Image (tube, rainbow, N blue to C red; front, top):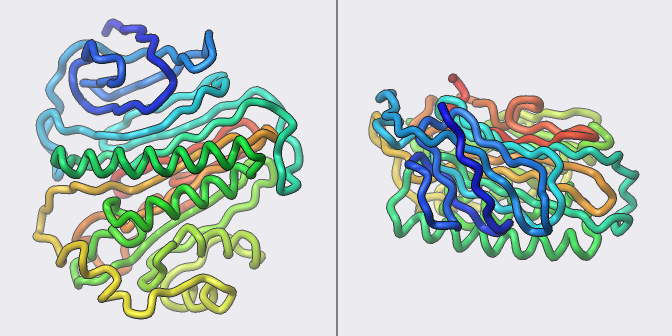
Amino acid sequence: MGLHDLDIPGQLFRGETAHPAEAPRHVHLHRGDQFLLDPVRAAGRIRFRCPHRQRRLPRAGFVSGLIHCRVYFILNKGKIRASRMKWTYGYVFLALSWSMNGSAATGICDSQDEYILLLHGGFASAPERVERQHLDVLKRAVTVGLKALANGATALDVVEDSIVLLEDAGIYDAGKGSYFNSEGFVENDASLMEGHTGRAGAVAAAQSLGNPIRAARIAMDRTPHVLFVGATGEATLIELGAEAVEDPKSYFKEYRPPPPQEPAEEHGTVGAVALDRCGNLAAGTSTGGTPGKMPGRVGDSPIIGAGSFANAKYALSATGKGEH
């Protein structure tokens, strides 16, 4: 399969499964097997390499025909040494690779000019009206996040705060917008990891947390553990400062009732990776899981090394159907 090289301004991009188009603000993939961002050659410009042959994808579950995956992501005009976004079957894989050694974060990072923030809103298929909402929220979140990085915020803080904005939006499968399980209630998962320290925190099957990513941060900062699960784990994190919504059914009910047996997904998991001006990386992922899942089911998103991972050189946020 041949490859196209497309030089496109480093700003807001939309990627989806379609033949590469001429429009400079869109990058399209049909086969969906690999998507690379080559080294930047000029400020604010990224080179994209993507497959160009049209190929129909097989039907399978909620993925049918050409609707394979859809992701929205943001790049700022900092230098990216070897970033990549890779589609495997039904997955979004968002990654940063950085060649500089990070420094210890002290709360204010301003030792270098480069900083990067990438966000994704999952691979769900949505009507045009919902897509516009997704883009508007992502624009808002990335504007706030990049400003914070420019002012010296740490990658960890920006990843957490960016995901909070997406959780609160109510239009993604995360936080307020989470899918209900087969019994009609929400069970949220989230994970967060800081690259240069290796610290991580996660929560799974949380039923009353409006911002699961905040709870993951509390697990990281205030306990010697990484993953807290279910009602007892949730209660522990609430005792340590995580905020529970007063009435989960009322808080989540405006989104949708329990879905049918094989629902069409319109909202996706969210994730973020960031590089701060100290040269440090962080990654985070938040999800409500698959629509109509069995109670107690936990996917890949809260698993460190699967949903989120970061070290001194790489930061990754991945999402998809965990059983695959």
